[in-house]
Amino acid sequence: RITVKTLLILGASGDLTGRLLLPGLARLVSRGRADGLSLVGAGSDAWTPEQWLERIEESFADAHSQAEAYGRRELKRIRESSSYHQLDVTAEGQLAGLLAQLEGPVAIYFALPPRVSQLACEALAPGQVPAGTRLVMEKPFGSSAESARHLNKTLAALAPEDHIHRVDHFLGKATVLNILGLRFANTFLEPVWNREHIEKIEIVFDEDLALEGRARYYDGAGALRDMIQSHLLQIMALLAIEPPASVEERDLRDAVATVLRAGSIKAPYAKSTRRARYTAGSIGGRKVPDYANEDGVDAARGTETLAEVEVQIDNWRWQGVPFILRSGKALGIKRKEAVVTFRPVPHLPRGFTGVDSPNQLRIGFGPDTLQFDVDVNGPGDVLSLDRATLEAELSGSELLPYGEVLEGVLTGDPLLSVRADTAEDCWRIMEPVLKAWARDSAPLEEYAAGSDGPDSWPG
Ligand code: BG6
Image (cartoon, rainbow, N blue to C red; front, top):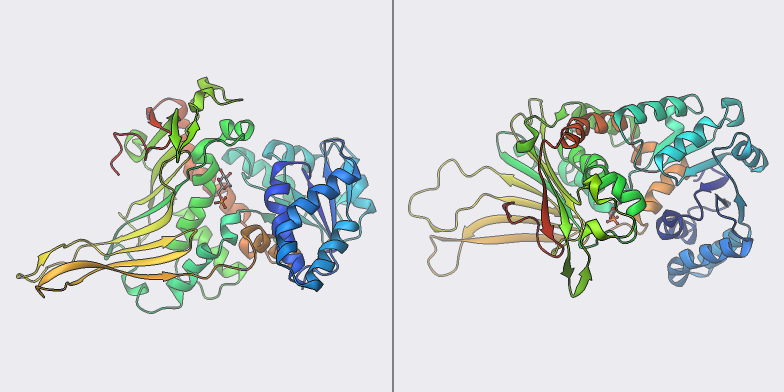
């Protein structure tokens, strides 16, 4: 059951609210999982009440069309009772003034760029944040280890850690959560889930989307900050953690924090990292301009749109096993998966012919699939090996990732959010790379939009 009375979204006129937050909320509301909740929007734009209601209606449309009568009534109730407030959240007293009018407990969702979130929190005095308030911070959480530490400190003065939700919507993705079930509810994987049997783990999130008008944010972030520092490190952590005693917040987040503390990217960075930027090309018949010529891009910044890093986890289980994290935009083939490559058999009995390749377990993120490649005796010559794939489609969640994340906020469960120490640690892992890249230690390569990356990168 939800414990929050009012969800206050800051940045309500922004893109994230319309595209992801409100649709996620609508799923919850239409399934009777946010009964009694009020929704309040605040933003810097001078929106009329009608504009806000229109935005809600648009974002709720999908859930509305799928909902039963009860769900539709709830969606209508929440929309019609919602209000919009024009605010400068960084100006002292403005956010506090609005908070004082709202029925608590309130969850304040900072759907704002990190710098603005920092200023908004600084503009609040501890006494202006009633007990029970939940503070929900969007990613990226800060823009460096230093700024993440600073933001954590500011937040800690306003609310206890278990009331602070640092959102990483990948933790709300069903497939990512399925990693836990797969690893810890089956006996056959755990005995081989270590350096003895695993050669490498790749986590790939290649998108066919390009910049899509997000230059203002993305050109200052790049692929490493946008995807790898946050989402892919979280997936890596779930693949690498020790078996927790429970999947409750404390046990799970302790395990995640412990494994990330053992993670680092080793110099020389020209060897352990790669980066590239797309040039003009076409994706599925759609023309994509050179990144450097996209509206709002400062080409001199050298922002990467494709990045790959090799993370090492220095502990007994993973010593020497590379975790290769890669993500990029404007690629020809959408590839979103974790691939676990096992070591080859120590000895293939003489007499076998045909393929002899290592087993691979592939966990696909949207569509959610599980594939296990094995070598088996093929048809015909029984000693000739064939590659077979055991395949399963995983069932998704009825809530969208943002629905899962919001449910955690509204029910007061921080399980699916990033803990303070972990947020700082993710920056600690990436910071040496960001600094090395700023010194030009790894060349910024090029790839044509629609290709599968620079020619010089092995596939
Ligand atoms: C966001 C990134 O956090 O995640 C985007 O800012 C990226 O650049 C997106 O496209 C991917 O997530 P999803 O859920 O849309 O696949």
